[in-house]
Length: 399
Ligand SMILES: [Zn+2]
Image (cartoon, rainbow, N blue to C red; front, top):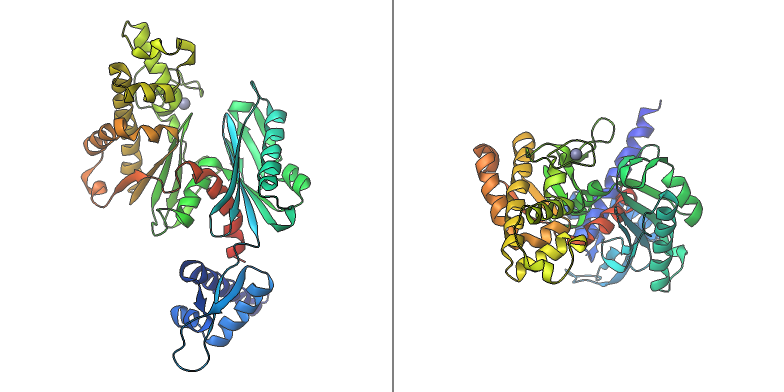
């Protein structure tokens, strides 16, 4: 092996990434300022910039302040010329976003899967969402440089497979080939919660964080974990399944077959189960004046809590305690600097946050609480599509 050549290639890659990063963070910026900021000589910056201009990843705009002599030409990301598609595949619905390379959303489409959807229906609905989001902007696929997909279930990122998704009874589906053939563009996939963490790292609150956890609490519960600045996937892509640790001796069965799992108790599904259990035990709620028991959802419980219904408020407050208990496990094991909460249940923050704080301070070791920040994600309900698009954006930036 020719080490010299390998080193040269690596150095070029590192330089390109640093230059793109500076343009993304500080643009519009001149070549001279880039050179000063990252300590590269002007000739190296110029040759890298030429390459980036040729590939239309950046563009020249106007001219900046001169310190005497010719005014310098400024550079910024060419976000209007190329787009990425970010797909967030959930358990009940799929969202597709048309996204700039600086992470801004141009268009978004959300479609529900048909009732009792199987693998085929799900894949068809995802394709439809991608066609629709591009059509909405009246654009063509020539400007799309790739599709990133955050997928519910266990995802083998090396083989491009959805290894297992219990909600649709999917096993070893070759997602990457299916979508590459359909849209004739590169496709990168990863687990849905992990891509949310990736999105927060690139475009959200966690830009500076080295050790953080994104906890997604929606229909299910999962965590995306960053350790020492890197996304942690585990030995065979199963890290972050915090939804299946036991947090309660309540006899509520989880979809994994066990009882008392964090997900079975504190997810949107868990909230409804506990609420109905209370009704069965004889508690009353004004929610039954509006809807019958079969149409109770965690969202309806939240709405009823806002109207002052005692049972709804009690169930949500208890949910806060359970979430705090789950979070304290992450705190004690990982000692992160930041925990970001995403997903539908986080919308009920008004009722759950106090319980979260109380359980966290009671159950976590003091040392690990010292510099810890716990809060909502920056990208909120768009964390999934922006994160998925980041799979492609990250790839371009590391050329
Ligand atoms: Zn479970």
